[in-house]
Length: 469
Image 1: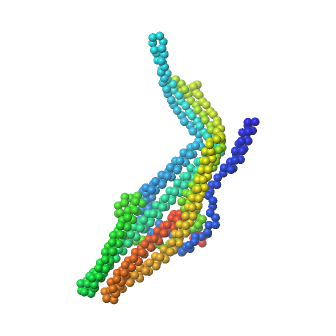
Image 2: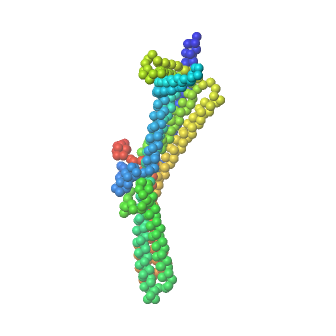
Image 3: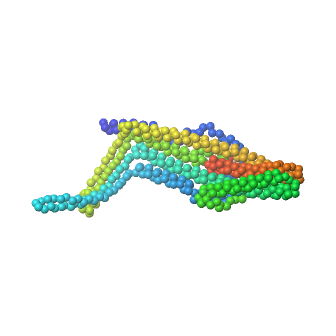
């Protein structure tokens, strides 16, 4: 009769296990577009995101940063901790065995007649203790799987941190070069303003120009001096920031390239659906969902009975040499079935907490995916607009450079006033300065696009995409 009841109980439990299955994957995104919103120029495709910039010095700095960066080392420690925790959780599947060796010495006093005697006794004990929870319902296995997903999540986070570090180094590198070019431009402009001031002062001495012209030309030069110092400060800050990212002391001694690289390639962006398997942050969010799904299953299984095996054995003797004598061996083995009955709602609360965390992680996953789509679409659209802006500013700078020459000639000839000359000079400088900023912004947007797409594009991706056309 008892056997029948136990078999019925097992059948009920096994049938209930189907209700404890998880989802494994977050809800899929439906109706994804077949292409990105911005059309790409397919004539020239980039193969590697660093090769496109053609900056050998930059590649060396990135290699150095990947070895020395403190932040990257810290993130690598997170992966190591996750691996260690996975080993801890995996150990629960195995039997636990511990051994002990104890000795004790006692004194007991006896009285007889007028004398007192003492009796000393020494005992030795050797023991082995055994315990094992049978993973009958796979409850422990779900915890181990969750820990393994945590490892994959940590590895994805490390890759995301690695890509972010590389992208930040490239952008800070461009910041520093742009600041250097702005400084060169300001020095050149200061030289032009100084030449105009000399012309005005010489003409004033001959009575050709007014004192107002001298004052205006002199203030124009002083403003150029102030701008020059601002760019020196910007360059110094950019280099020190870059050195810290690399893992160096911020001494502002890092040599720079002379100019910003030109962009001549497009990017094989792939399909929107491909992004789900390329972005490390998306993969990290997915692995987090899987880990919490396993823990949710485990929380629901906490209501199932647990079977535990325990045992102990050992010897106890007064002679140390008898510890290995089987005649003194004592052992005990027990099997237990533990079924939670009432815990004040604690198990229900733990199950509800796991369900809420799982629901929250799915929302986080969808938010990360949508943010990734936004970053790619924004970077693709910005790439086109920044290219057009750079071209317009290049033409503007060229026209204003010619206008500055004409204004200088007209002022010397007396055909225009000092205000027109100085205004033309300032406009020419502002246009060239804006062109440098636009050039840098386009480069940094390209870095953002590579990062939004999930990092480096390898040659096989390019070859496959070209074969599919």
